[in-house]
Length: 79
Ligand SMILES: [Zn+2]
Image (cartoon, rainbow, N blue to C red; front, side, top):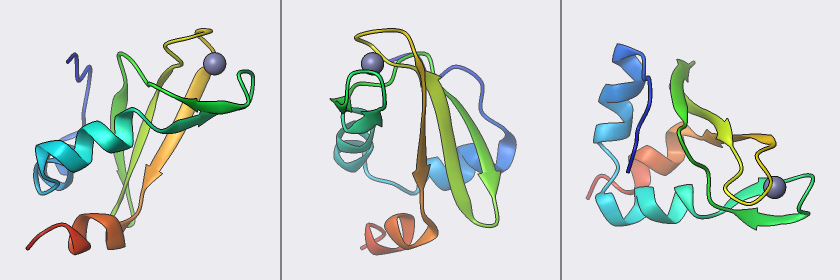
């Protein structure tokens, strides 16, 4: 898995999410072109107000897709 470029804060938040949950998130990003949940590849990560914003090309069509991992998602998976 290529995690591309992450900001320091995004890396810290992303690290709090269990591997399994992360894979679920990465495999279920909505693509407006495919009109379906797709895998995101070569994504970058940014932190915004406690959320992690993942951005990268759709594995199927290459269109840039964005997945916001909300703070609640990282909190809920902590235990
Ligand atoms: Zn697509």
